[in-house]
Length: 269
Image (cartoon, one colour):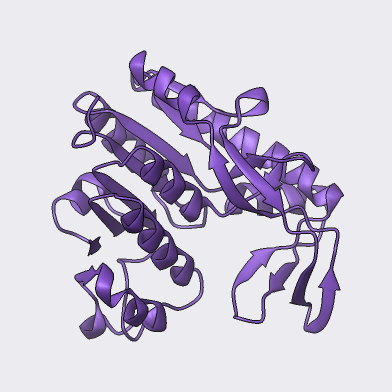
């Protein structure tokens, strides 16, 4: 495997992504080049919380970033949702003759550190949160992924990391950037439920086709909501040596191939 071949794909976990179309596309791509897949959990987590009658709460940081509030009981639900989502995705890829391998349970590849004290808004009230089990990504067991790739497997990772405080909820886009950067991947494709980055979302005339790393601060100013984290992930991947990052539309047929062929917003060094 060489850097110029490896592709890392992040499949968004929110509503709207056409997972069947994405899997069909990934099956074609996996036959031609090495591939690592990172997936989101948002929809699966929301559904499981609804079934269990657990309210979904978000933390809003002073800088405006939103993340799921994950106290210990919710962390356990998150682990269950992430594991189930991973198993379904692996099974779907295997049905398409992809030699997919899930990295869950004892095989979780990401390493993280729990944020032990977070100043945030919770349900509109400012407080210091000390029981959250989300975390910052601090490393990666690249050897286990490298071994899977050497065996012609497609590693499939959830946004979950091991830590001294147990399993953590981590950001999926930045997890994908960590993986891509560790392997100096040629490309990172981040699929979402929008076309890409806009200067003034959702005005189509403000769609941004390409951004150089030198202009990333402008992109961060334009990005709204979850898009800001995707732009941060693009920045981190490029700074780690990834050749290009594309934020593309996961609602379309052949979404990864389209992104690689020029659709979406392309970030380059």
